[in-house]
Image (tube, rainbow, N blue to C red; front, side, top):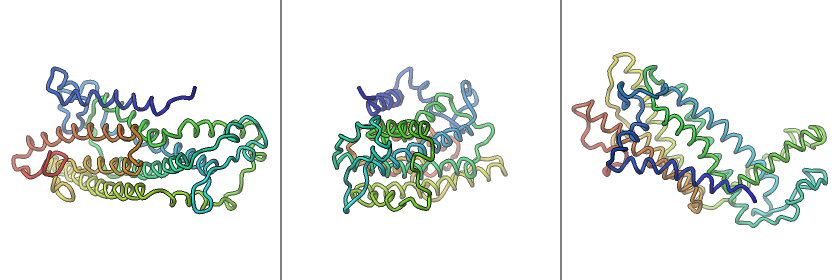
Length: 337
């Protein structure tokens, strides 16, 4: 019986979302659960037990870049080898004989006829992972060069583990529909490499690789992928701008040792526009996925719940900190909340 990667991920996302939903309901647990989401300026000095430096955010994006890159390379290579492009549309064939030199180890693929619909799903997973790679690479860059966290800034250790969970589970969720077969394919390739060696694996020189064949199938994807990508890029650009604004404020704080109210871009509407942009980014990924995968819906639900809670705490802090804080600003949703 095959590993149900998507079912395991769905259970994990539900387990992660449930405490955040409970935190929204007034109860004796609310304060404790909300405390897990606090960090930086919203984390009071008296509450810094079981915390880690906020600069540990770097760990999230190192993990995310390494893991997303690995998944992207494996899935893309699998898609190229097992779900090739031809005659203007996606079609399916087996290359097991070529890959294994006639070995029966991978013979399951010889009799396996994959549907056209599944082929689109595989290439769509590649597309989603490309977008995720663009996102995590930028976040890694910003964490190192733009968002210079104060040495005194802390975050709760539960928030730290939640971040590690997210950047491990989210990329895998984007390709969960084909992950088991991709992992089997990759394991087989590694085994073949070990047994036969590089020279007998018929690895083509870089100059002889048909790079167009790796990219061309992506152009055959449906309109929803490209609209989703446009939504993703819209959020991506605004998050980059908002992080640049926050980065410049941190530089000003080092000079004057005082917090200042941020202005510009989506700060005109909300207190945490970088969180709003993150929701737009993952909304774009959800749209690009076609909206038929429950796992990706749960990823989006986690992002919305987590960032809404964080934005509410940040908005509350701004109001308490600045007497003349703009009344028209909301926490995360313009004109609404």
